Image 1 (cartoon, one colour):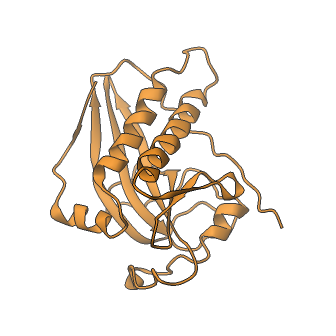
Image 2 (cartoon, one colour):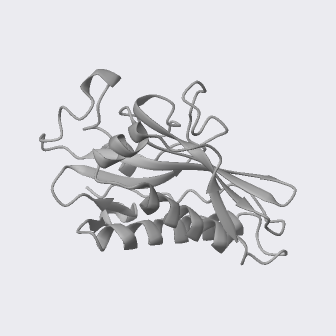
Image 3 (tube, one colour):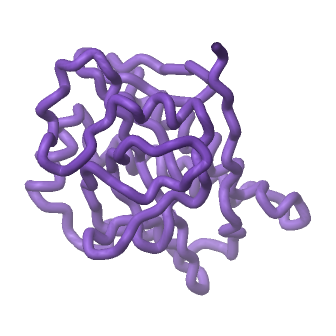
Length: 208
């Protein structure tokens, strides 16, 4: 299997990711692990099976490569996150929509967020004017690797970005963003047909 960027990454892409302590290869390894896992979904399995496998392996590989570089896995409320070693940056994964990766298109999460993720977004920025200014605040800044899988014939494309939502009440989809680092699509091909059903949204509750 081969993968390639549909368009070239720029110096600005790399610089903005570096501000979060990330590199593109961190993200690509996680995305590749998810796409590869989709291929193992049995054709007569549950309709959400491919998406669930994608999510499990994407989270696992993302945390694996970042923990190897000093990040710490965060299992608070079973949210499957990873925290930067010196900045209050926490990274998770999220399924977006077809606007993923397109700075001119509206981005929204596929699912409404539960109380745990809503609580962790309270310390996020409220607009684009405060980019990175509050990294030394005590609150975590929750960012997401946002992806959306598109398959046409035997070619699979993953739309992707790394973005920080504005604080969002529980029970609502995430559709307001303080910062978006939109990235070129990642193309895989040729691949056998795979299911692109939505991934499973794992509900987590805040324990008082």
